Length: 342
Image (cartoon, rainbow, N blue to C red; front, side, top):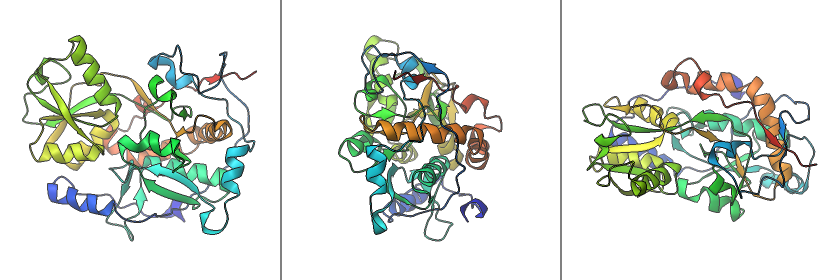
């Protein structure tokens, strides 16, 4: 059983050669992992009065974007019924994930078949167990950072669970669950670098971000308004965030800006790197789905009610405590607030 499998930690991933091996493993086929799930009762908590449903992003502020989600429910609707109606080998939840984010969603070369493991992967199995009664009933699809929203809108996946930040802009394209993790943007650079954080030391420095990421949006906005030095070069963008780490190791850029949770894991992969300064934003990860998949959004929120109470802490201790610290407090999302639909 999945719950009893021995987790083998990856070591020595700091070198560029190891990164190349990891990128090659990203071409591996779909892998299923089992997981058990405990049913949870229905019912909203902390409902917030609002006009309209999740899809409405007008008048939204990023500071409240994480609250624009529907109350939890265990009822099946058209989206869930369509998933359940799949037959044979296709009766699976199709989920877009990352295969290259250490301790979030990555293929562990030290396991048979290079198994997908990580904090996000644990959550996927919880959702599959609740919807299909089988934590193994998952088809994983590797989705680059820049393709997360297109994959949902095109119907290539039912949802994306891939360290995806909830923002007002994205709410115009997809629906989000309640948040399941709290983080913020940070700077990752060599320990020997003169960069001290998100400040003037980034002047004349080359920064790498993932295409379509909140990191790039933040850097561009701040440079345009003058709070980031105009000489900061933010032209290097890549499809997958891990590519920034490779660029940094090759000396093609001077620093990486990404979510602190991801940056900490990358620093753990390469002991020559470190986080520079504190997080300079507050962001929340959510499960992304189609805008009109209201029943699926509500079902995922129902799963998250149980996950926060039974499973979140265990997954954090397994995957993230070593890089983010034993105290999970800073990473725990706030109590969810839901839109009212009556």
